[in-house]
Length: 428
Image 1 (cartoon, helix red, strand yellow):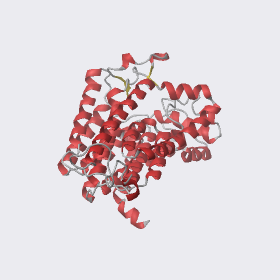
Image 2: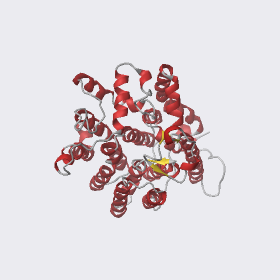
Image 3: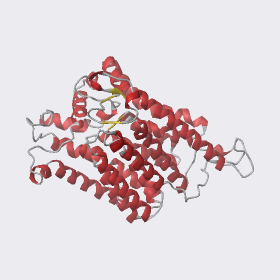
Image 4: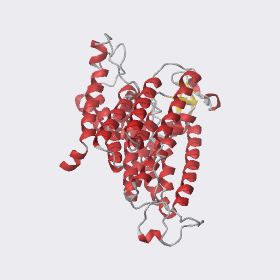
């Protein structure tokens, strides 16, 4: 354990600073430096906290009942259960912050907790960078860049489920790259039940597996979500079905895109984002199909076509070379970016997941790429907080910046060796 902690010194320091700075910038900073009466708190967190407190009291049907606004899968509430237990023990109120609740005491418990679990993604990114052979100092710079952009989903908007799920996904990639396919499936399942966004990366994970391993992987990836969702649906079918399938979002409160007018209209000027998100998953599957064919072609000897013969590996590595892992990480970032490209309504923290993943292969490309990618990601994070609702002022520049960032982080200079399989899987 001491050796593991020593290897993760960088994210340990980064996480501690992140929580301290996050608490400072949301409480003492606004009142003493900006002379505001109210703390600068993420309102979105309160609905998830309400759902979690209901769950902690055994009210499973209350997770999606009116008042919570939860549209993610139930895992988003489950990861906050320790925080809810402490809130219940201290008897803290969940009243929304505002003019009548300027300094809610519950934030002093919920704030540090949600920022701490968001830092899971920092540990996962550091572990992947280490697996890619990135030096300690470059990993430190990667942490600085990752900390800067993590501010958006966690202290700013209060969505620790996005960061936690992405961290689980990155650990799943690490496990898969080391040949631990079963563990990778369970970690992916944990990620999906917390934030279904990571489903966009699932086709890329499957592209590296032999056909016979795909079904067990999918079962492990779906089981946690199925169990939790079934429990919520049995307790409250109507609200659960409506929240999970329609995925309502407001182009008035948030940022419209060029696809907003095509989305199904709902009450209160909301639109249904669910159909577009299903279409985005289909696009991610097409991307994975294309890269699978390319990886298969690279695994064949020159001058031969068709299925790999005896001794020739098919996709599904026992232990991936570092170059292959960098390639896979980039494709995961690309599929996660599809959400920002095709979402009917955007929120400022939506571009964070692809940026967080893209920085990892950038760290393996050298100091210059990492510096440029980190600065661009920080600039996009700041620009995404802008208030404009004009598509050409807010959404188009943001998408263009994501495209440039992905191009900058693409590991094109690395020769991608074929995946490795155990001898029993390399033969037919």
